[in-house]
Length: 143
Image (cartoon, rainbow, N blue to C red; front, side, top):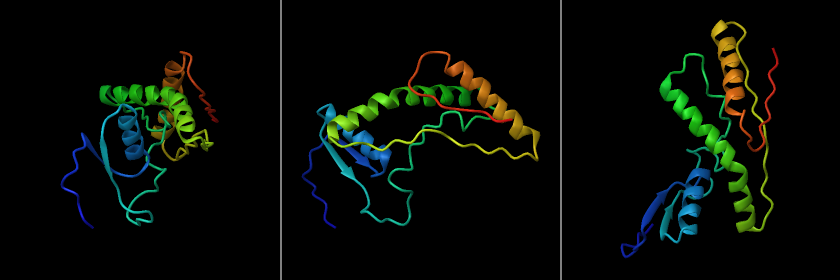
């Protein structure tokens, strides 16, 4: 592998999975010169190129969450709300249909009360977060 030391790009993006690709695309769309570095396809020591950006904002909640986790939750909800427009932009830029699958399946351990409490915390937090109009939010809770 050779490296061109004369590259004069503004930003180096490292990573070829969904987050690295999204960052590089956003920068290029803003007329920023980008060098994008990532392993060749078939790298066995990494997640799939599609698995890095789960938008299941509520699946990471716990009844034990503090202020930092609440702040992270707000960020995840904002990302989830921005996603439909971002996906439309990707579709427009590529000219191809983009596959999308909605939903999150969370399994709680019936052995511990903390799991049950965390599931109810997710439900209550989701209700607060989705009281404002948003994109699509599909979640059912089975007790």
